[in-house]
Length: 195
Image (cartoon, rainbow, N blue to C red; front, top):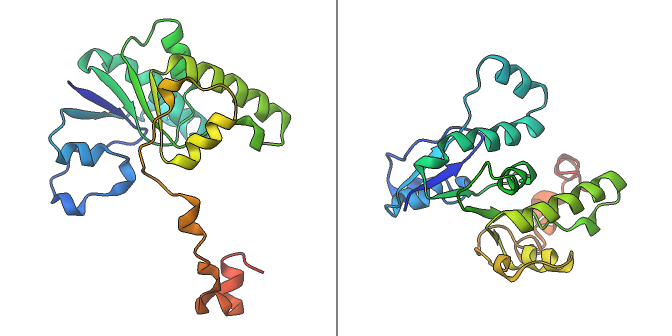
């Protein structure tokens, strides 16, 4: 089974010891270390694509990445996305039949629209949730908290009730680190936005 790891920036197969690999690539280096047949795809940034990309990278990077990966889908058995990316374009491409490979996502989003106050964001999240949960083959949430919030956001197919046990959980941040001595100094408190 060959896996295509879709990412907006280029990744290379590691040539370093397994203990030194970066954890930020959400499984790519782990799978390389474990001998999984995996390659990464990132769009080339040249010409007009580079110009458009620079205008609004948060919008165009995921869009170009998802459209571009379709060229290489015949070289893999599974498409894997393991980082924060809104997936509505890929879900729509699966719906219309442009993407015919199974898509597995390690989701860092809950797709829960209840936590936003802005009306147009609520509408976007409702539409995105509808497409993603129907057309992406498998969502696996980074931790139990994200899965719980996703389920609270509305009906979520049981096939998506997966937890990777990867990522931050609130217990990590609830250790009262802000009470340590370094944060008691006024200069440091201002630096970190604490009153």
